[in-house]
Length: 153
Image (cartoon, rainbow, N blue to C red; front, side):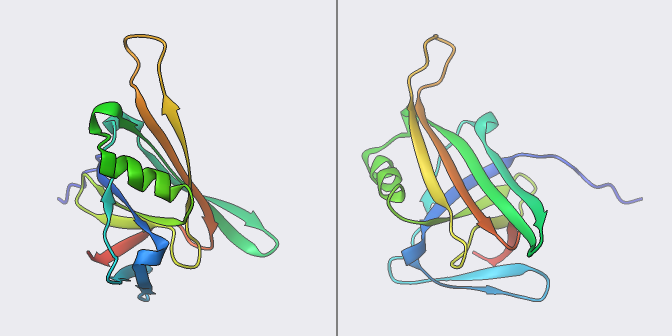
């Protein structure tokens, strides 16, 4: 008897700027590999574990199915280095692709060179001692495909 584990959650979430990607190549099984250029470097987004949410919601219309992709997470204040703060500020003015790894060990991307994600951010200053201060990040975009499994890191 085969047992399948259905555990959810994310081990890591990273962003990469669109101008750091040479190409994204898709195989016949909707899996992709990413070729980075000389600038190519992922930025790790340390997040409050229960704050992360990644979705690709299909919406049918006359032209076919469009996926509304979204990635939402909270970066707690204690993880905000100067370098990470600079990367978040830069992301507001450019496009990104998100790479994430599930707790099951699979790696996926959201967005792509043809349908990148845009970011909005909000600095959080909670009014109670039980709240978490930091940056709430929201990456959104539309595409003709949902998140795709990454073949090669």
